[in-house]
Image (cartoon, rainbow, N blue to C red):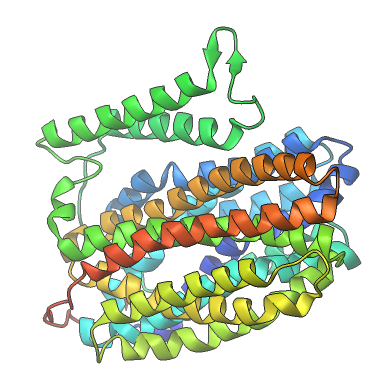
Length: 479
């Protein structure tokens, strides 16, 4: 006996967990000063709270996508959601920075288990002709969650304390577990993958070293880390291990962790590169913006979050409409439009920001950013995943999401380095005028993701409209 699954109900259930894990990539930044005081620690320790989550999230995703292919995406998703929810409770109860860092690492692992399964389910539940609206909802959730973090974090920090940016995940995660158990079909791809152990070890070690060097280079003044080892050597070792990983994937004729043939698909290659630039931008734009509105415009965490609220709302409203439109027109033009709007919004903020300004000068630019983020996620995901072989959907989803998260890591590291350097230079040239130095540093740093988005435009222009595929059989689950 079978029971037909409602694809939209299943997608809504999956989006609950997806919203949570993306929210936690940005919500911590608004709570940094409060966490430094509350845990009686220094800024470097709190930077680790943010970076270890990104590290534990990005590094295992190629492997966790294979788990979904082998054991079933629903089961892996539920396991990840349970780990994420319990780790969130642990984060809120942490009494020291060291415990919080450990809990955040576990939280990131839960997120890595969940994320690849959401896109794999979309490709399974919706036929290609109806996938645009589904990607629109998914893209709306992605854009809304990424941008809502500072707003929700500011309200929670001001009124309840920093612990509640983690406690809020517990009831949401519990509800998400119930919804997923009831509404999501127990789809079994029946792909008996073998596990590429050398590939797993090389990718984890290479990405870990590369991310560690980029995230913490500034802390070590780009010099010695421990003993004779310096930051440059750590980064170089990471690059060499990743190069070795690629060589091994080419030589592994059995079942590589990263099947390079998926990159022969032009849309997938172009979409993955576009995702790197979007991930870079979504992480890079917040640090200078938060510093400007709090330290120059002197807004509270809640007020700083409210400044971004219209951007969040606009992004969430636009994304579903763009998703539907991506089925009726060439998606690459929508992706290019979204990237151009996002770049224009950031450029407008850089142009209008002054040390004597009020918060409203950021408003027009943030609205453009909201249009851009709302327009880019759904068609980018749709065109990237639609032409991938169904057998490779889980693996491709893992690669695509890993690329976006690694882009975010690069964005965080590069922005931190540039911002610190420009603040130091500005303080020296302005005779210690902090508002002027911070404003100039913010304006210059925001231009970095604008430059990266130019690469995204080039990648998006290389996309082609996906060819139609036959609709798969309706999703069903055993009673």
